[in-house]
Length: 210
Ligand code: DX5
Ligand code: ZN
Image 1 (cartoon, helix red, strand yellow):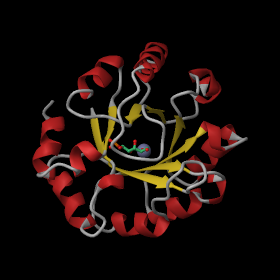
Image 2 (spheres, helix red, strand yellow):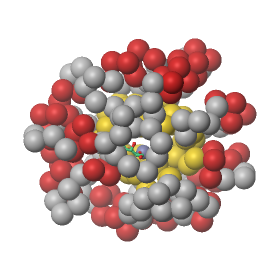
Image 3 (tube, helix red, strand yellow):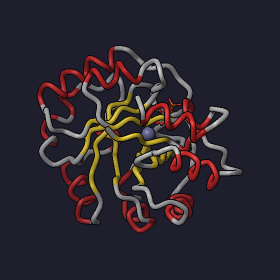
Image 4 (cartoon, protein in one colour):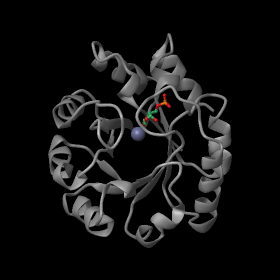
């Protein structure tokens, strides 16, 4: 089980301290939500901030590109030192080539799908992707509620691919965590449930000990 706190809702005026607190609480990865204001209706941060985050933690960086034209930016994030680069099937015309390009850069390649996108959109690349990210909210903002039908999608994917790395992203908190795990998730992106908590370290521990 991998806990991957998303810094989207961290305090960017105190980002290093927030990252170190969740690391102390036992977080396994740090999830970077990259948004371009075009693929999703919000803008977050780019490779420069990813590189600064790289310098303040030893944890693997799990980079989720919610951007159009991801082909143009994967190299910059690889150079910034991230371990995983996940791209949206909806954001490219050439998903097979893009996933292979990510692997040629030395990173693990993830593919993500939005709530309304069926699993059939990624069936052909399940043998290439190192991980599948199932969005359980409509991407763009932290603090939203998990969309229940996304759990069925995870159940179907898990039963088809027992050994696949399946990541859930959006609306994961202490209530929905058990539902996600029961559906077959093994990587949990958790944003506001950790970084909006009074004690980030203690809140992280609650998920690790779940
Ligand atoms: C997409 C983002 C969020 C974030 C998690 O909008 O990817 O899902 O990571 O945020 P929470 O855990 O607050 O839903
Ligand atoms: Zn994400």
